[in-house]
Image 1 (cartoon, rainbow, N blue to C red):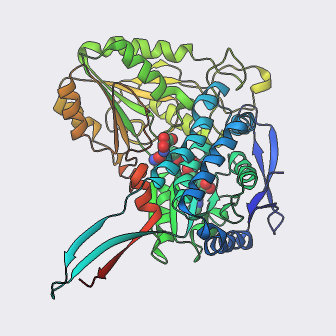
Image 2: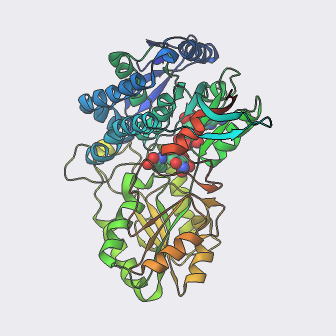
Length: 486
Ligand code: NAD
Ligand code: 6OD
């Protein structure tokens, strides 16, 4: 049984309710998860508050940062355990989790410990009306108890992306992992205990969203801030919860990200980028590309090569060295993605590759398998082009000039990420500046420097995290004005 982690102890939810954690590759039961009820969430929030007012607050900044380095080292030491838990919950290829998810889990703690350790505070010198010197300086305090609500696509990576800066800034957290991926957040509880993080600083409550742990947590009067990663629609529900009590929010939401390929691009580099941005993690990356715009001279070649890339991906179990393509997270998500596949067919799309469910061995028949899919020929108003699908698929459309492609790229209410492929650095710079998105990659994709601002515009989010931007969210500033005697 996967348990809640409250005040340093693993425990069952008081109501005794459980739910199933299913293997996305086969549909088989991995384990039962103990669901936290309202009382458990309340206990977690109280434990976090007590930790804040007790031992956590008393640690010196350097001691806290050293402790976060110890957390990172322990994740590295238990890499195999984290890897096994992450691939079991998600079905993603082991190779992907071992170069992306687990190392980033550790890196998040190191980077934010470093950011906070070397953070300056602002200071202004001036004078009072009587001519005496005055000194204004800023004090940073943790926000308090932070609710961290997480999705299932990169569970450890995205959870620690929030937990690490929150703890580095001196907060205590209550994490609500996705119901689909409860394991690595729970395992992190063992790490916290092992390295001596005081009890109550890191808590995990399991459950669902509405009328369950997610809602109980985000509506709890005892939390001081909410950081959320997930769907835009869920973001709306959480914003309403946050309005009660005026809770600060950080929202990392959905995207419908374009890739723009100019005719002067290095086509091999484009294919490397698109292979990853369309198909990696079975397309379940918020930053992933679902709209590809190609300048007309390269259109046929890119479409043909993208179709070949899709056909070469091989579905299989995480540890299968011949396979490089996992399932979707669940049958429910598979139904949603297949709904878009059917819609594209009905609207008369040209299906360059895929479009359905692949043949898999009988042992995998209960899994959420899906074909990587490439379409052309849909009108720009199609919901396949305007709505986030969150699957391994993209639509490719031709364009003739820069103004036209900018209008197409900026035509959805989302604004998370974009990639631009061109050898012309001036054009890349101009186009990047004209895209209404939070992150632009030029001639690459998902190349991360954790000190940079990260987040979305429009319906893709509120606020920025990363480096000092995370510190802004996870701390409160108060200014001290000190009138000095000469
Ligand atoms: P989701 O919104 O369905 O769920 C996210 C979390 O919210 C889960 O833990 C869920 O239990 C909880 N939740 C659901 N309803 C709630 C409610 N009413 N109150 C409180 N909590 C609630 O998202 P998902 O399906 O897990 O993840 C996929 C989505 O996340 C995609 O839209 C993707 O684009 C987005 N995403 C965005 C980013 C980003 O950085 N912008 C990163 C990863 C994923
Ligand atoms: O790399 C990150 O820090 C980050 N937040 C990635 C988000 C990926 C979305 O699926």
